[in-house]
Amino acid sequence: MAHMAKEGISKDRRNQQQGYNFRGIDDVYNAVGKVIAENMLVIIPRVVKMDREERQTAKGGLLMYTILTVEFDLVSAKDGSKALACTIGEAMDSGDKSANKAQSAALKYATMQIFMIPTEGDNDADASSHEVQGGKQAAAKVDRITPAQEIMLDDKMREAGVDPAKFLAPSDVSRAADLPAGHFAAAMKALNARIAKAAQQKPKQPAGEFSEVGDDFVPY
Image (cartoon, rainbow, N blue to C red; front, side, top):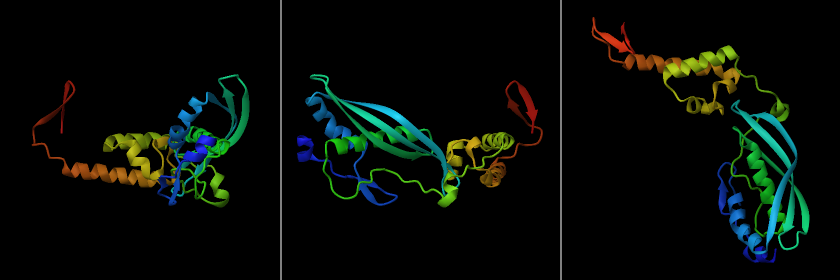
């Protein structure tokens, strides 16, 4: 604590969505890791509670919202004595990283509070922000496309030659199964337009010629 009171950690990172500066988990690791090692201290995390729920973005996509209660044992490598700290970490992510981010948040704030690491400004520390629907709709379950629509969409994306993750990114999803039901018609329309445009640009095969596919010859 005495060392960190002199050094501190500045808020050099910037949240572009909400316009504030913050300290990232890597900043904390870089500043505290060496000091902890020099003082023969070990920090051992333990998740004691996890709450998760789905949240819908303003665009209709899906976010996983995770809240973790994490205990940290601060163990002295000199004599085995230890102290216990407990903190909360929460995070949202459109993929599978919400729990990872929540663990990082819990460790970051535990470390800053345990060692009283000084800084200035606000205490927000998330690098990104997610816009979710407000009120009672925030926790409402999002209706997804049906299995039959999923097959149709996958087939159509293959036919159009698009990358599913990039094509579905505007809906905040990376695979057809997660597409909100309300986005299905627009997605199919966009894919059909791509296919039609590609067909118009494709050179016509002269009459009487054949195109080879595998071991067979199929006439145009």
